[in-house]
Image 1 (cartoon, rainbow, N blue to C red):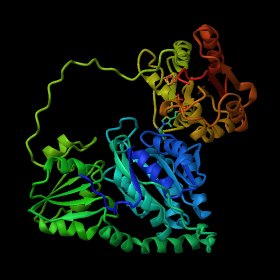
Image 2: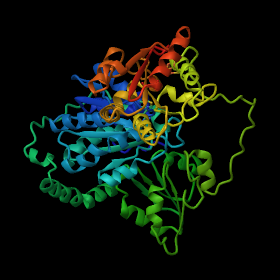
Image 3: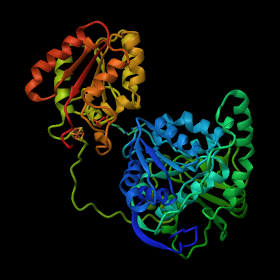
Image 4: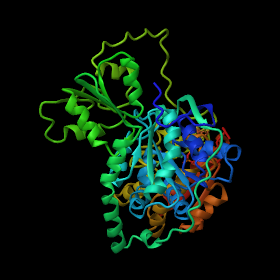
Length: 534
Ligand SMILES: Cc1ncc(C[n+]2csc(CCOP(=O)(O)OP(=O)(O)O)c2C)c(N)n1
Ligand code: SF4
């Protein structure tokens, strides 16, 4: 079912696009001056597409920039917006934790040039540490936000969101999920881009300086817009109410399609589709007032469902969803589990043709990380109190046999601070491994603290010259640049060692690791060899 909310464009063409590509193309067509991101599945393709297509499809020049991390990407986009130009910033869901500080505060300062923030969630954690739902951030920041149901909506909403951001003077958030970001559909797109309005300098730049007196004033403005934003959501063409029988469904984002697919054309179910937030209260009241029973179908946390039930529940109404066990509490929704939630007979599951052997992910043959781990585990085998904290990257696969070399992976940059904490708790050797991209993302700041206190720990930076895990994007610093960064944060040059993780240097690498682990204080060992995929 197509849920095209806007009129077909007069001059348009059809393209077969991933959800991410639809967003990227819409941003180009909206006349952005810049796109900013840090790689992270399932959002990476947004900036990659802008990089590739900007020259081809847009009238002017678009700066497509990979930033050191999501916070920096957000701030770069915000700076461009303050300068009166349209900008987009994209990231995966956990990236918004890193960018949460500017995100939350920019809701108060507001935007000038259209600022669109796209966050891709990963229900079922196909390639993530958690399945947090970005809609909570949208509500937390009190911003208008969207959850497109399909690739066409992803395009249309993104295109419109820039204008909306300028009209409201607020950043506009768009939340997508992996299935939408990474699946293709026909999308009707403009044949050429829009020329955005020339905004010039913002007249009241004091709004952007969040000293308490300004922040309070801006907070009053933001909260004062709450009711207007709800009204706009109620009138939005992306939210659609159809009252029929006494059984109702509220479906949001991509999950809307799973409902339509199961109900078909001929059904008696009342339906509210939500793609624009804040939650359109009046539409919800109309649906719930009309129905005895309502199933809430949303891919992510029970964001809408929990508000419907509140603390006390709704007298005389049966609200069903993930919280009541009518839909799975965690993981992605799909047409099959939604079918069961709708009370329809489950479709027969086809018998598997052949038993496929399980294939756990593993490091590529010849991967430099593999040879590094072979040396590290050998070097540490005599210690019964060692801990190796890890960070996030291809090297996290070192947790699996045959290496079984690491003991943690929490969030980007965590390993260095964790190694310091453990060393203070008396662990020796206290070690950590971190890739070159993760080091530039958020390893520098904890290393400053470790260097200042000369903590008794060993940091291994695995410099493979790329951001391998997310598809080999360009890394911020590699080779001697990494050495300069490490020196720059205050690590003693004599305690920075370089090793080449190749089997032929295995014995000398073990010796080097043991030497550094045995020395009192902070050592940084850089294992330097390019990823074989680049
Ligand atoms: C906050 C956050 N942003 C992005 C990601 C996605 N991500 C996981 S690892 C990684 C970078 C890995 O690069 P590097 O540290 O150089 O290791 P490599 O994969 O090259 O071995 C990225 C971008 C994430 N998990 N969390
Ligand atoms: S992509 Fe590169 S870094 Fe990742 S496992 Fe393969 S060789 Fe190793």
